[in-house]
Length: 268
Image (cartoon, rainbow, N blue to C red; front, side):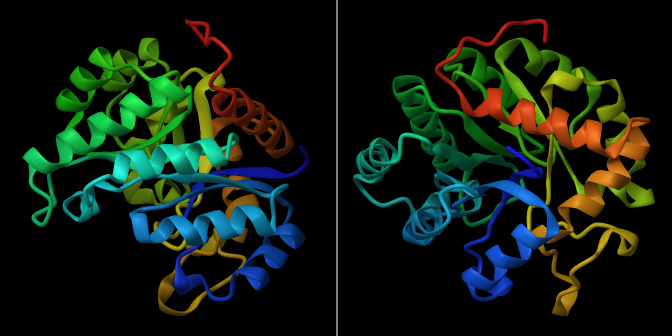
C-alpha cells in the first residue's frame, strides 16, 4: 500500500471537522492508511462509518479507553465482540491503564482491560494500548493474557520497559509530539528499538508536533492527521534513515501488526 501509515489517530473526533473533507486532505497529503481508534462505546458507530466510507484508508479499532472505563455499560464485551466479528479487519483499541485518571478507578480499569485482552486472544485481533504510570501492572497483565500482538501507542516508557515488552509481542509507535526538544529522551528510546517493531502515529487531533511539522494548521493548536508525512520526514532524519525507507518500513510493520493471525517471531 502506497503512502504513509498512521498507526494511531481519532479521525472520528468532531474537532477535526467533517470526515469527508478530512479524508480528502489525507489522501492528497500522501497518507495511505490510518488505524482509527475509538475511545468509548459512543464512538463505535462513528469509527465504523469512517471504515465503511473509506475502507482502503481506514482500519477501524474499537474499545473503551481507560479514561472512559467507568462508562462501560453492562454487556459491552458482547457488543464489542459482535462488532469485531462484523469487521474482520478491525483491531481492538484504544484500551489500557492510566494511573492519572480520577474518574475511572484502578479497580474499574483493570477488569475492563482484561476483557479487551480476552477478546483479542479469542478473536485473534491486534490491540492498541494506552499506558501511563502503570507499566508494571500492564506487563503483569500482558504476561498473563498475552494477545497475538499489541501496540504501545505514543510510547513514552523506558528502553528497559520496552525490552520486557518485546518478547510478549509489543510494537511501539512514535508520535510527532516526541519531536519536540523537551521530548528528546522519548525519541532516544526509539533509536534503540528493533526497527521491525516501530510504527509512526499522529494521535490526531491531539499530541501536536513541532511547528516545522505542521503542514495543515488547525485552530487551537490541534493536530491534523495529514501532518503525518512531515512528521515522518523529521522522524526519519532523527533515526538516520531516508524518509521513503521509513515510510516503507512502517508500512510493512503495520501490515504485520494488523495480521494478528500470523505468528510473530521473536527476536524481531
